[in-house]
Image (cartoon, rainbow, N blue to C red; front, side, top):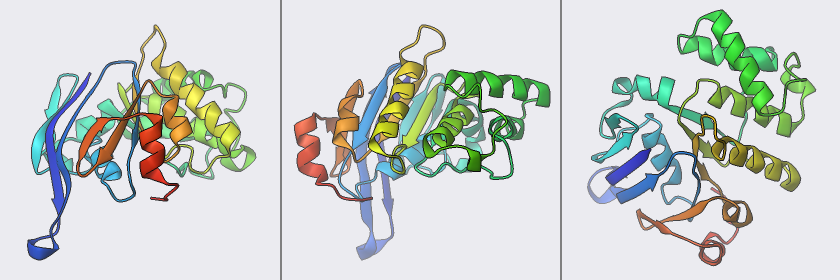
Length: 238
């Protein structure tokens, strides 16, 4: 479903040049939940930004379903952002004056979905994350975990095949973080329209619950396990 080959990206010039990604190779299957870990500043967010079409790589290729990109700039991959990749962040990025339903529906309308269809898909997405009884609530009327569920609903409502989650439980307590991870598992491990999720996290315990763990270090990725993650993370903050 997702295949990344020899992806490179650096920043700066001359003696100030820093090579961040030095040949990333990564494959994901449909319906797979993959955790990505690594030391602070190793390029995890840079990698997600390139996959999500927010940043161009300098070398390499990304194939997401039938779409090939990677070194193309953001203006050339608008379709990837609109139809292929959804985002979940540590901060929920909800509009405070809009209900849960309107937060989700508006994101669809911005992507070109007609209003009635957007509302229908928004309702379906909110029900899917367990918020069928909270659709008319404003963000301030929802707990942190419920707000993150709205953000997840917003990301999946457009039926995008890939979800990028950048520290999705960073602002949540342990119990609520586990609830969010269970939602991710339910979204991936379903017989109907499974999605794939690439999740950046600093939490080795959370990462160990994923289908697979990858470690990003020295500009490349490698399969990892919980012991390696503990040894390299050390509780650092991004």
